[in-house]
Length: 458
Image (tube, rainbow, N blue to C red):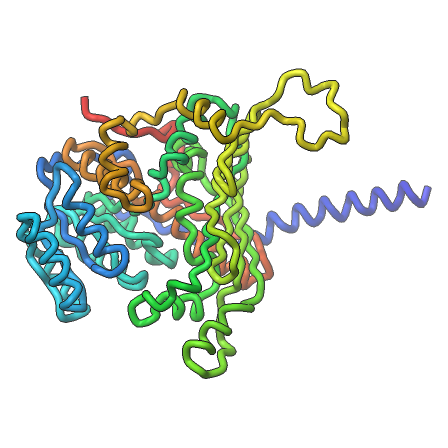
């Protein structure tokens, strides 16, 4: 009798907790769409036969981008801009040696405005430090330019909404430059998922585990360490998040609904600051490790992690879990499909599944070529490089779609959904890991398009 009463009491408490949690989800406002504006889903601009690109920010990422874009057919680097004159000149000289005359804007933090006003520029390619991403992108769209913005493209909800609203109002593309969506493994895994190899994808994981100890010194004016010191949350979510959102058809038949996040204390961060400055650091905000769990409208789940302060090996996780199979990239690439004849397996055999890796995995994945990975593009990408070629494929696809007047692979809603994780995770952490509602940046149109796909010229 006592046991039955106890079970009933526990069940009642769990039911109350679930109901209570629903009522305590932190809800965030979705501003109404301005009169006369329409969404940018599947938006296609007029074709641009030869895209004039202006690169803003010529540091680690931007300097490489200016070089890489000089190999992409269908475009030319029309202008370059950096606050540091020597960087601007180095890019100009490199391009001039290839016969490309690029206008140069430099000398102040507002030099980008001149580039955005340059009539030879069709698309502004933003590679500045994070805090300048949004001002440059907004100014570019307001002055009639399409924009492509390095990651993370925005760090706050207000910034995400500003980019969405400006893109909708100006009818200009605002693309997130998420190169990991073009990694050869992720591209093939996406094709396998779309062809049903793993059944219905119900869970996905992504991460940015990257020990930045050797690299902090290369960031201009130490801006990236300062950003971690001054901000809490997953500050760099898109490398892990973008590719899995594509596999789950986010805002193309499903949408993100609720998020819960937690983090460790900042153990290593203050040590880095103290080592660099010789002063004690007591105000470091970002934890060494953060974890964010997200649920979708269709009842699926996503786990995202961030860690740039511990000596873990590089890892983007990238795992897709389906009803009939699994694929993961780290620490080694492998696929596991539902095995046949498993009913007689010894329960102590913890690794009975049929797992494909090595040459077996290569042979399996070769059966599912991604439609954009033509032999010619793969060969050119590997020759030009950029994180193994994925940067080049990203640039190539962007220019190809602009040349042919096609929708881009990644739109402004991808940008907002993938980047909003930073502020939403902070809100959850600051409120005792409370659930937070994820805004619908499409304002109700998330189910209008069914399934992620690439556009091709006919």
